[in-house]
Length: 213
Image 1 (tube, rainbow, N blue to C red):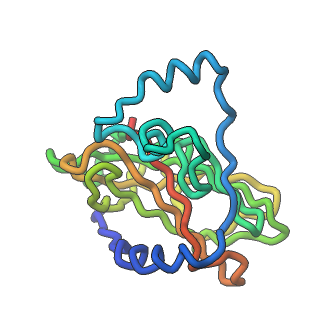
Image 2: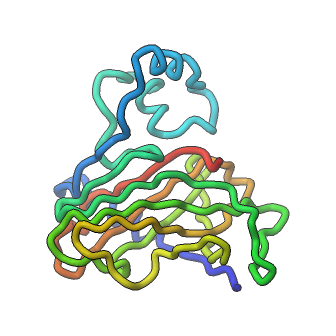
């Protein structure tokens, strides 16, 4: 299967400046906090000088005003959810290194890391949600660079076509490769533009940052 490049960086770059003056697309529903002792141990392990430190961790522990306020609703970590104003909730549960290739899959080159994004989509609205209204962009969080998307056949459940009924939760995947020179810290951005216009297309889009494991 041929690997296809998804070039939407320019569109996002145009949208972001406009977002500052517009409303929001929804609210964060972050994973439950760890016990205080565990949280304290985690904080002591944050390396503010490492390019592998996630954007969310850096903002929380390393910025000058760290601890003064929570990260924006659109700045998330794997396991956090984002609920759009129409009731649809999306969670990027993890991005894993992928190696279970089918014999007919296109393999990554020696200079690329293969990955699979795992998403959980819950339709909390009162009408079906079209998956054609959603798209995912993956890039390097530390040094930039867009991923190339493909489909690894084994275990795939593509975010492509069809719809999710009200009250239903579905697990979906997106596969691709990221050049090793961009590191193993992934930035996953989700664009959701329902045709009925229930979501502000000019507001900042939710993004998740964490290592590819």
